[in-house]
Image 1: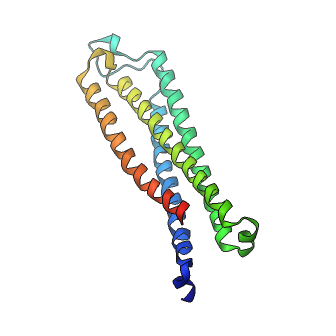
Image 2 (image 1 turned 90 degrees about the vertical axis):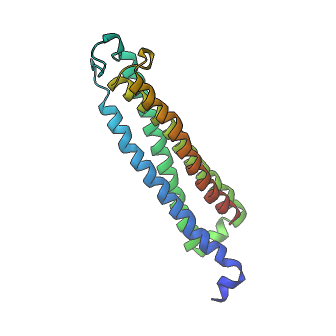
Amino acid sequence: MGESSNGSSGNGKLKDILPQALDDLVSVNSLFTVAVFLGIAFASPNQHSLETHRPHCDPDEKMGKRLVVSEVVSFSSFLLSSLVAKSLKVYINIYYSNKKAQSTMDEAQFHPFKGLMFALSMLASIIGVLFLTISMSYVVEIKIGRLSCGVTETRAAVMALIILVPFGLIIYLSSMSAALAYSIRG
């Protein structure tokens, strides 16, 4: 108990908060990765949209290719984010559980490394979400009809993506930034 009253409780909190934030980041990335594979399932050649009376609203090969590219970039970003987060969690566990690690890598060296790795993981996750949003708009166009055709349902679905995803990203970014700030300060 004496240790927690002399200031080492901050490290104890950091030891608990940052790994939990990293676990949450990996969980979110895993959920989005499932969405990536669902999106790729819609990239079938010669698919017709639900706008049956206007064949020019059907997707072309270029749209299918753009869907696959945006899905691959999204998946790669989520994978990078998850791998960096898991690696950082391993370093944190080693750092805080082994007293010798504190002598080989002092506090001044560890905090910037930790913050940089956490920021990289966050940034990769955000890039993944942005490319997933783009790919979902392609899925909507492929299934319902191209935006250029003026299909009301396509516009409504894409507008929902354009409004709701950034709103969610703002909330996600602010909570993860708070965890990052706490980890750098902590």
